[in-house]
Each structure stands twice: as C-alpha cells, then as structure tokens.
Amino acid sequence: MLTYDMTVTLIVLGVAVIFLITNALRNDVVAVLIILALTLSGVLPVQEAISGFASTTVLIISCMFIVGKAIIHTGIAQRVGEVIIRRGGRSERRLLLMIMGAAASVGAFMSSTATAAIFIPITLSVAEKTRINPRRLLMPLALAALISGMMTLVATTPNIIVNGILRERGLETLGFFSFTPFGILILLLAMAFMLLCGQDMLAPKDSRIERKKSLSIDDLLRHHKIDKQQFLLRIPEGSDLVDRTVARMQLSARYGVTLLAVESDGNGRRRTITPAKPEKVLQAGDLLMVIGSSNQLHTFIETFSLEQVSATASKRRNFFQVVGLAEVMLNPESTLIGKSLKETLFQSTFQSMVLGIRRKGETLTEDVADIPLKFGDVLLVCGAWEDILRLERNKSQYLLLTLPQDYKEVIPAKQKGKVTMIIMAVMVVLMAFSLLPPVTAILAATAALVLMRCVPLNSIYEVIDWQTVVMIAGILPLVLALQKSGIISLVSDGFIQLLSGAGPFAVLAGLFMITALLGFCLSSTAVAMLIAPMAVDVGLKMGISPQACAMSVAIACSAVFISPLGSAVHMLVREPGGYSLKDYAKVGAPLLLLALLATMFFCWVFYLR
Image 1: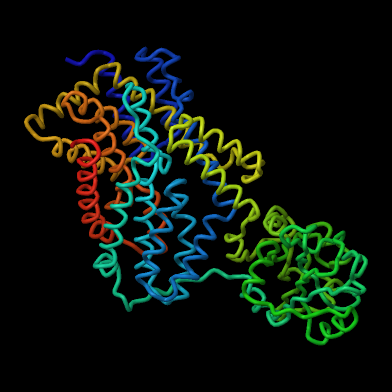
Image 2: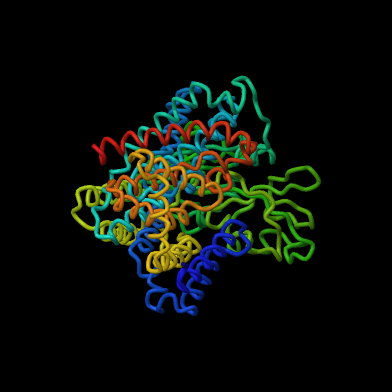
C-alpha cells in the first residue's frame, strides 16, 4: 500500500519526467518546481529540499565547467586538432583512429558535448582537405566523445553522481581511474567496429557530400582583391623605423602601406604578436605584417632598409590568431554616410582600420581614408579579434555582414597552455592517489586556473551551465525523497524478485540496459540520479558488489549510441553529417552490445572474482 509520501513523490517524479522528455519547461525550472512541490507537500523539510545546492556533486560539476573552459581558452584542444591534421596525412584509417583517440583523451577531462563542439570543425576541416566524406568521420567523432565520459571520474556528470551515491551510503567509492579500463576497451572496440564496417554503414568510401563552406580570412582578402598584397617585413638594426611609434610614421598616408600587426621579442621572452596600435613603438628585429601594392612596398622597403620575409601559412596563421577581418555594411541611418573615414575618426572610434571599400562590385583600396562613404558600402575592416567581435554592437551604424570562420580557431591565452597542463596534471595526481578528496583537488585546480589567468575572469560565471547545475541541485532532493519514502527500496525489491535466482551478470546486464533505454529520451544526468540509488541498493541486498552495480549504471549513461534524442553530442553532428535516426540505430545497436559485454567483463575482473 502506497503511503502519502510515496504517492506525492511518485506524482512529482512522473510530472518531472514528462517535462524533461517533452522539454515543455526548461530543466532548471522543472528542478525549482520539484523543490517547491516536495517542500509544500511536506514530503521533505526545507533544509533537505534545498540540500542539493550544498552537495559536493554540484560543486564538482560547476568547477569542471571552468576547467573545460581553460582547456579551450589556452588552446590545448586546438593543438590536439593541429597534430591530427599534421600527422594523419591522407590515410582515412589513420585519421579515424587519431580523431577518435584525441576526442576520447581530451573528453576525459571535460564534458562530452564541449569535446564534440571543439572537434567538429577540426573533423570537417580534415574531411575537406583529404576529400573524405564527413559522414564517415563525424559519427565516429560523436561516439568517441561519448566514450570519453567513461575514461575518468570527472569525465562526465553521471560518473560524479554515481560516486556520490556510494559516498553517501558509506561505501567504498570509485577511484579517479577506475573507469579508465572500461573506457579504453570500449573505445578500442568502437574503433575496430568503425574501421571494419561502421563507416561503410554510414556512407560508401568513394562518396562525397557538398556542403556550404564558411568564408575564411583568405577568402575575404581574395574577394576584395588584396590577397596578393600581404607581406612580412623585418626591421634590421639601423632602420629609421626603430624607436618610432606607428602613429608618428603615418605609413598609410605617406607610403600607401597599411600595418596590421607586429611580432616582437617581448623583452627576451617568447616572441609575441600585437595589433598595430598607434602607440606601438617599433624595434629592431620586429616582424611587420603589411598590406600594400608591389610598387608601394618596394618604395617602403627601400626607404627604411627593410628585409622581406617569406609569408608561410604557419606565420600567417600566427598573425591571424591576433588580428582578424570582417565585412560591415553601412545602414541607411548611419551617421557615417557622406563622411570620409578620416572625418569620422573611424579607427580611433571603432578600434579597427579599413583595408578596402567595396562599392557596386568594385573594391577601392587606395586613399580609402579620404573617400566619402555611401549607403550600401561594404567595408573590409581589420583589428584585434576582441575589437572585431565588438563591431556587432554598433548596429545603428552598420551591419556585421561577414565574420570569417577563423575567429573560431583563435586561442585567447595560448601562452598559458603549459601552466594549464601542469595544473591539470597535479589535479589528476591528487585525485588518483587520494592525496586530497576529489572536491578539494578540483576546487584547488579551479582556483589555480583562475589565479593564473588560464580562464577569463570576466566570464567565469558565464562558462558554467547554470541550467545543468540547478537541475542537478533540484533532482538530488527528489532522489532523497524516493529513498526516504521507501520507493527505491520497493523498486529494488521488485527488481530483485524479478531476477531472483539469476546470477550477478544478469543483474548487472539488467541495470545496464534499463539505464541505456532511459537514456534514449532522458538526459544521462537525470538517469544517473534516478537509477544509481536503486542500483546500489540492489547490489547490497543481493550480495553483489555495489561498486559493480554503480559502474554498470555509469558506463551505460555514456553509452547513448542508438538515439540522438538523449544526447546533445549526437545532435551536434546530426546536421553537418546529414544523419538520420536509422544511421544512429544501425551503428549504435552493435556498439551498445559491445559496451555491455566489455562492462560485464571488467566488472567480473575488478569486482566479482
């Protein structure tokens, strides 16, 4: 017979599940309503209803968002992508293995969704350069990103939640690398499956998909017919440019040369690239990126005894990590119309310089500062990336027409990459050898990343997915209500009766499949919070290692291979890959079976023997 608390809790659970499946309300709103319902109904006192906000699980997850941002902000993930392109060559098999391995490795320390978001443009770039159908690479990428959640304790939220359940019951918790053998084996099986037949299920090897390519900086320069006017020049000792400011030299007015950026020694440290601000003082040894015609360049070089340097793709990429380009089109109400750039003080007002004006299909690049602007003019502007991105705020003056795809590859704090890796390594060591509790180690690493400026201070709170944090803080009390009201005990008893006489493998397989099936329509975080407490209770009552039961649930939460509905990772690759539900099913079903077998094997090795 159901008690009052049981009835109310089941109603709250049912309504919450409906909202989470249908997305009729945002997840964080559902979480707040859960807290209100449990409090107003008297099922939980206020202190217990809001206890989720004080949970170590919530704190760990919040910190891991910041850690993931540091990995992106300092360029660690981007460098991994560059290695893939450089070493993978044109071998599809090698590229597949490198993409999946790199995604699984990076995702071991950040969210699977963020990992997929980072590697999608990298994978598309690899596919385009090697003329490989992106359908054959994007699905393997998504699978590897999901499997990365099986690599470490902090790789995904369900792992942290499951470990928290064990801790709350006073049981031995899972170690930082307890998940790693499971993840590695499942990753190897997934790689083998995709190489043998998985890719051919998605698309024939010789097929290609034409997709619209986003414009790059090179495309913009080519479109404005100044792609052949980029040059790199070095200032030698004794040049008249030494110890002169950019503003004083007036290079554009006197010599028709536009200075974009300067690479300098940086007081004996690593050479740094900075935008060509008016106050910049030029020094011997500086490398200048300039734009100008051949005749203008020749005069400029002769006048200041400069040395021309080969503008390799690598050097140009380094410069365009700092300065960017964009196209803006004047609005009919713009106060710039009828005035020249010199009159409007465009460069000082918008912190960007104009390289060319496109008018009626023709590009004007000479004496642009003195040309009166007209409605419909398209200006090619150049400046520091932060200033380029800020152009969008001036909608009353112009429309940001084209932003090249290169801005997605900008690494804001490239010089902090080594510091970030050291901090991450220390965090892993502290957790792996239990030198500090996981929450303490992660909190210390987060503080170190913030203090060392490995993440932007002004966006720390922006990088945290507060919807996820509030959702977890709201569902944790629901799990507590399920436990206190006796529902979890009742369900676990029913599960035990259903599998009475069955061996431990049948129990673990049952828990795995129940979790995986719920993951088709619910987020893995919600599934972990609902199933993990029951799984641990089942293990305790049936004499099966609760760690094995918890591990089965955790691995199954990341094994969302069949349906894209329960995984943001699959949704990210669905559009660029052109995948259908059938594609996910025919590739995901065999992989789910392989993941189940791998989980059973290692549960036997580590927990059941």
